[in-house]
Image (cartoon, rainbow, N blue to C red; front, side, top):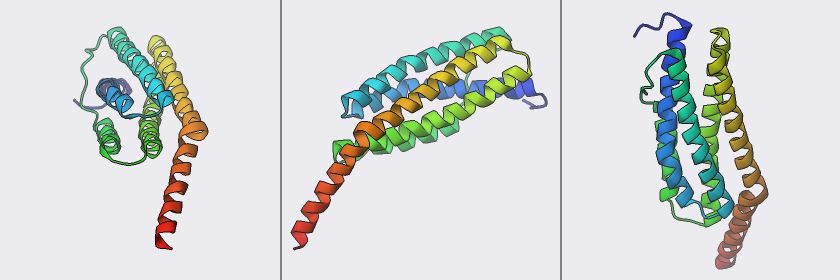
Amino acid sequence: MKLDTLRKLFVEELRDVYNAEQQLVKALPKMAKGASSDELREAIEMHLDETKEHVERLEQIFEGLDESAKGKTCKAMKGLIEEGSEILEEKGEDSVLDAGIIAAAQKVEHYEIATYGTLRTWADLLDEDEASGLLQETLDEEGEADKKLNDLAEEIVNPEALSETREEEEVAGARRR
């Protein structure tokens, strides 16, 4: 396809994020299972439900644009998910691994925030008011998910990971003496 109009680019990027969301629907249960913090697991499971709604909203947008809701492989999301999967395969202290899961999840959220913000702006320019509203709704949810992850990191997971790190350093220091 020749990308010679903003509308074509808009549809192409919608297809990209549609695939990204579908990849996330498959990846988030693995992240939730890998989390040791109940709060983190619950946050991921809640976002999984939202992600399924994001897929439905995108399908609604495609229908409104009279376009097929077919995805093209989102290579960026594929890479972010692969990177996040590496943390799930690591051995270590639970809180430290949870901190890594949050970092991976926030990378995904930031990618989605950038994507949905751009798509919403294009929808506005193209006078696609329904699409703009639906994209804004998803953008707001992605922002809330990022905030929730940030709060979990700052209030629970990172302090626990730091505590584990300090304990490990004390044990290592005692061994050297």
